[in-house]
Length: 172
Image 1 (cartoon, rainbow, N blue to C red):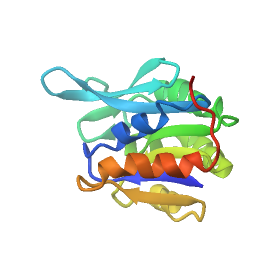
Image 2 (cartoon, rainbow, N blue to C red; image 1 turned 120 degrees about the vertical axis):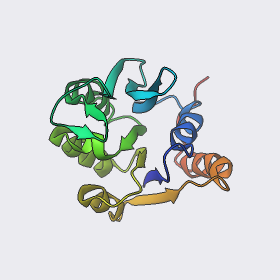
Image 3 (tube, rainbow, N blue to C red; image 1 turned 135 degrees about the vertical axis):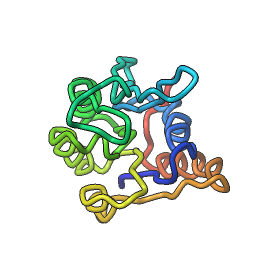
């Protein structure tokens, strides 16, 4: 069963995923984080091997835009998509996040569906309605968890418990 976290921005979805996978051995994929210098300038992609790239930035000028950010399709595909493709045989595939920026890439959408077909995705998905994201949320093999301030701490343990039932390999 795939587990996707949703909720408003900055509620702690990525933090939950990092806490859940910190003890797991056979995990791959990527997460995103803000690029800040006094204010948010963009978003970084980091695969679980530590390779970094820029997902979006205020200084990127191209046709792929979300608000004031230009989206870097090349780094998205070279780092995030590649990390997911290389993780299809892993126990857990982290995809943080399934959002407007990532969905500009057809390669991302195709790879996401392959990953979901394995039933091993732990990720985040945009809360707002979007044709493609809504299709993912409505899959029978996807469990959506709404992250709120009141439940974000217990969700870590709830997800770990759910994953423990799969007898995953732990770091030693």
